[in-house]
Image (cartoon, rainbow, N blue to C red; front, side, top):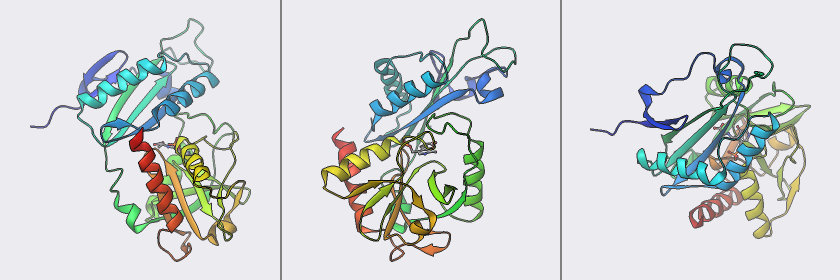
Length: 285
Ligand code: PDD
């Protein structure tokens, strides 16, 4: 018999089937909420302090009170991971503005935020896509102007990922004014013709990826040349290597963009090295 799936909702650990949110939740009606995703490997959370710091920042940017400090978030996450016996996968956290009669502006009387977490068991380390390399397509970036906020309003990303799925590829890279902004759920990197690691600089145009920050730090420690600048799509096609990063993919090699082979059409050596460095650092904690 498998143990029942347990989720966290508003102070309680509950069987999945019993966790209910009212239809007037502003997350459901307006996507008025924030989420985070941390990976779990060897039963431990990866880069979690940085994910919790970004959660706090995102909530602050839209005026939702963070219901927990980092230490209590981590206690709750750890308990949920343990209760579900997850040793490799993800923990998903979501906070919405809470429940109120439908009205666009924030409820005057205030609301209790809705706080929810679940885990997903998933192969993160031995992901077969790492060996084959991922194919990606480019799509137009249809999103709003505050992409630095990790909002649950993900319709543009849902549509981008669906286009990728229909094209039979793993990810969609979103493009604005001829340059890649980021993946639909990841940060885009290339290794340029002159072997420089390139990723877009942080701004309100993209999410400040936690994995991005760790990979850049590791690249710096390894004395790699780094440039934070725009990546024109044409340059991405001609790159020596390409990859994307996220809490769920870690460092994922890209072997093809819009049907054009990247480099030699297989995962590149620098990408592999950065993935290994990231996993080593994650394991050290
Ligand atoms: N997505 N850019 C976007 C638009 C994202 O949704 C994500 C993460 C990233 C990478 O951020 P990080 O390295 O902090 O995970 C970049 C998560 C994994 C998701 O939506 O499931």
